[in-house]
Length: 231
Image (tube, rainbow, N blue to C red; front, top):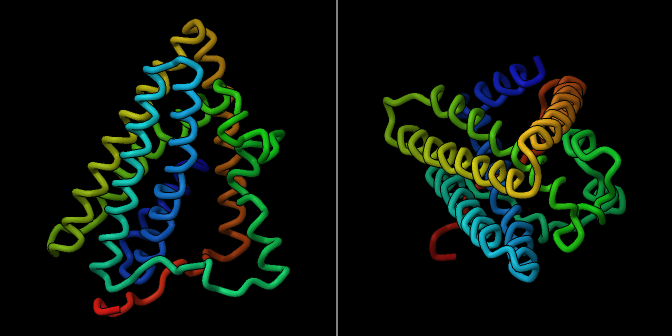
């Protein structure tokens, strides 16, 4: 139920031209924001002698960079861009709120501190299983969102093709993460670990839906009008 509600919410948001920019901006921030984390993990895997994993993580980081560019380009075609939050002055209350996790990630990683989830120290099993779930579900979510975009306009048609390409990459990411777990443990242990993080994802989705309902569907604006080209 939680997955269905979130899928419906994002499909409706991306189909509506008024809310589409904010959705695209959120995805741009999420995809681009994961690049330093994945790159650091790639360096760690290489230092630990796991060349195979290091190469997979480096490819993952490269893919996420491209995904961020896809969403940035889509925003540019709408004459929008992500707000530069670093330029905005922060009040103490704003700074405090930015340090807090979203309801989704607070529930998904319940019991883990932010320090425990940093690249140099995060448990590999935690990273692999949690990210496997996120990547696998993202591939399905992106496919659903692409399908609701209309084909009768070049901008949305190009966006649809870009999102479908991203969905394919996410499927590949889930595949290497599953293989990575199989390299470390038995198939039965992998299934138990995946089930554990699947349950965490369900709880996280419920927390996310609850947050959306509390805000009556309203979200913080992440976009602004694009600056002139000569600037």
